[in-house]
Length: 453
Image (tube, rainbow, N blue to C red):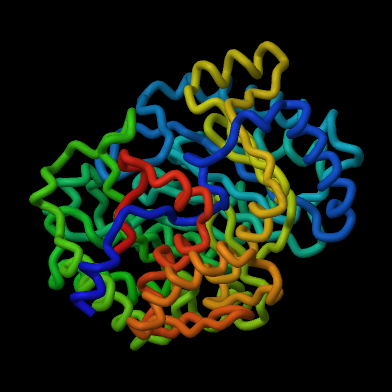
């Protein structure tokens, strides 16, 4: 395994989309194209599956130096009202464009820190959303809470609007690691919010843990999981730390590269955590998630409905995802659109009555075909395709890339499809890269992605 880690530990996408954002062709994109694709997708799917809604709430009171998310650091809570106003104004712009009243099957509040906002502000946000929309019969609503500032009132307000999932960012309990990433968070805080969520009635509570952080050791990761398992969260997201300090605005400056585990050490941390979780009855889902057998994520894996989009792994198979808020990304399968990443630009454009679109991509037939193969690999560990789907040159190139994985015992493939072996799971991102025509054509000379291992 060590030699394979050295071989495959290269920069690569996480494949929450295909094509990945750096390879979007903005020359084919326009607001009119986005609206047309959106309206067509809603007219087909709204009455059947409903749609997904992601709302980005970007504010945080302090900077976590491992974070690569879009955020604005402030202790001024006067920003809450104008931001909620802008999100609701953007939602009205979308609802005025839709051919019918939207039915929301999936709703997620992400950040930043959603619990930065006061409970009454979140209540106002959701009241405004549902003034123009209707929940589906069995919706899947979730949000991200910071254990240090999530109150019981936060949890209750969102529960009253149908939220049954909540995830808490734990990262690591070791004090040295917490100081390095500027995330001082006692176990008692996580314990308290977890108990509150259980008492209120949340049916899927998730803890986010990160491996590969500065100063992490086998002892610290073991201690983190031992503490976590006393609380029995329904899901655990066990993410690989994405070290991307070259991205503008990224706060990853709280430690030196030498303070990070090597690729082999990082993989050992993952394997230790995975063994502890599986020994406690958790099942590995896709690339970086674990769930107990009663959880909907586990059930989706086993009934073949597991899905992956810009929110990560999800149980809801919708073809329409509308993103609201600064930097949010929308997805209607045949097109993507991203909002302004700069917070002030976002607010100004919404205030002017404009959709605050920054960029996007319209998927051609090849994009859609390759997207399906990558999605199948990420969610099911296997995929199939028509035998005549590839040209002679395309098949020769793909086969040459897949042959390397087959010789290393990571998968089996033929002219009809492929199956990833358990040994290949650590390298799902690498396997997907074999299908990434835009990445393979571009061969970027600068670093765009974090390491795959």
